[in-house]
Length: 404
Image (tube, rainbow, N blue to C red; front, side):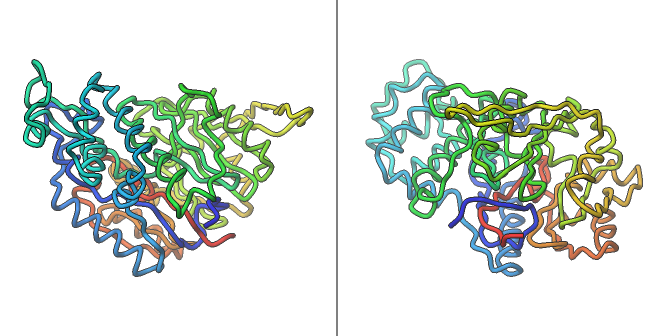
């Protein structure tokens, strides 16, 4: 499997997803903000919606759908990987002295669940009666849950030049990126095909970058959002590594307003075909500053790149990179409906092929506008999945597409 993608819309062949699990049931009205959620979804209904989504992908594309939890169990059979991930999870809680108890008494599958759904003191006590819990309350988390894990787009990104493993802005989400990196660097299906672009070896605390800010514009160009989740230093390092690798020739840094509705670049626009972009009304014109990185020279193994500030809107940049560009606004530009549907990620559809997308059924005005543009729109139920405030693109990590 060639772990490189040269488009956002080539026909899907393989994708990684995570079915919401017990980590969602850990959310309460009192801890949801701490766990980076804005609502408390109903898990069973959420799972039915996600199963519908997964089945739809299989039926309409024939693509292989990899399940994160299954892959994680498989790589955790390697004791060294298990110890590393468990130690990292316990360091955050300053409870590393629990590690041997956990590894001795929990099965590999139970350890995988602990790393995704978290584990509480009283749950460990049932398995380990002699657990040295001290004054810890039974309801305390030994390992906090990762309820955002079903948004598989954030922990990494696959580009034409290789893989960017995310350094998450929010400390509570870093385990998501650690899990994906462990899978891709060690699972037999992937490990021999990984060309790591970021983070740079030896950097234990790299600047933050998240997969939702990375969009492949063409075979030779990618755009990275400078957002509230992705730092300028990370973009510079990624640009340097990609340009040195040689496949990508242009890396655009897109300066996003530090607002909730611009959290990641893929909330601003998504590419649906070689000349069609879906966007929130006026979002492209609202982004007025971009920077372009290109390769200057490679001399004596030292890479020098050039940064050029472009006094152009993102729209102008896209028009340069995408010939005969067509722009479609969410809800066809209707200000009331587009505002409502953007809250539920109307612009964040998942392209499974050229002009072929999966979208939330609740975004009906956007879906109708897409159909009027000749786009095949496949709808999925969204009452619970949408409560995490991420769309179908956010929930999927394409790992193989037909080349464009």
